[in-house]
Length: 330
Image 1 (cartoon, one colour):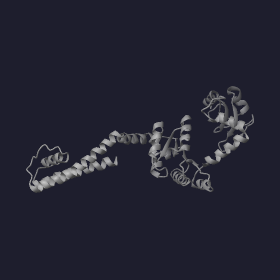
Image 2 (cartoon, helix red, strand yellow):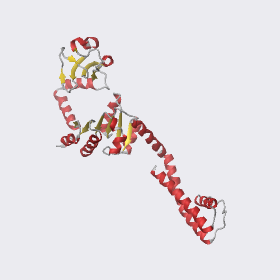
Image 3 (cartoon, rainbow, N blue to C red):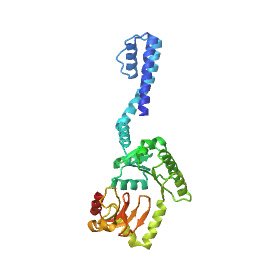
Image 4 (cartoon, rainbow, N blue to C red):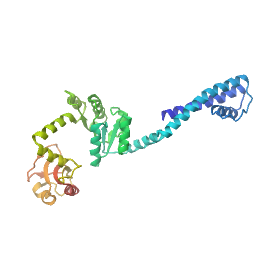
């Protein structure tokens, strides 16, 4: 777009220079001067409307050299824009920014590397709205091919985060490759929205987690540490790990079971009732694994007498259809 704007401005400058040059040298009218400039620059050569003196001929030769070179450059830029999809990218970017501007309660994913790609896939599978911020044109093309919303730029820049709708966002996930970049992103995001939930990736280097937490991250995850623990647990407790994988992984249905979290609304029928009386186990054949209170307290393996309160988040285990049935009731 900048090249097109600059080229247009240069074209008007050349037309202005040629027109008033002919008016000053040959005493041509405005129309005749513009006509002579256009046919000279475009090398059409329909014929001179005014007789040229020696100085006028020299001026015309200079104008031909300048104008022909410029016209070749202009046509090459237009051809490149048409053939390589430059115009399509320009208008597509504008359309993308309009879509992002209308988002609410969404997530901002900063970085589309190996980790960011998996995060986006899972967010999409669970119907979570998100936008990706990425600076690499190659990765941006992959994001567009997948149909995700994306913005080009540095995620640590205020304007880019504002374009991503950080003021209306529910959370931000910083998963670029550098700890320093993730720190800058967390600092910028926390400054723009103090109550935003921020999760950041850590390389696992000593002190990285502390710096990210100081920068404003609510949660810091080290994929290397988690991967190492996962591999060790697979050796020590293989059956437990296999069961968790089957229950958590949404892409497999070998057991037909899922672990899911459900929020209890104030209008739910089971509010202020003990689990035993709620009928969750009897009606839906679901196991309540844990209950997280609104104040953050976590009840693991709650007893039948544990009360269901408004705002609770229940972690349940069972078949997907039964989970959906309970979700509609809550």
